[in-house]
Image 1 (tube, rainbow, N blue to C red):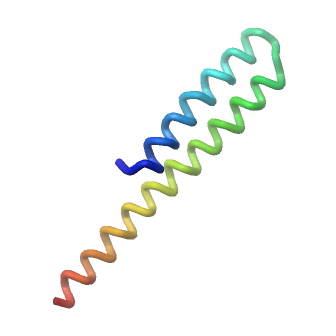
Image 2 (tube, rainbow, N blue to C red; image 1 turned 180 degrees about the vertical axis):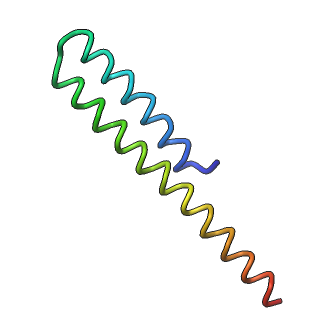
Length: 66
């Protein structure tokens, strides 16, 4: 797990907490902020996974050409 995946997972957790707190308290602004944070976290985590896969594939290609 790289730093992008970790940061993404943390943002998703933080977003879910904000979303839930907003929903329970009736604070639509906090709920919306939580949804945004959660979405950003999903994007960061996906980016991190893709970056790892790309680096791995690149290294495999380089290893095969040696």
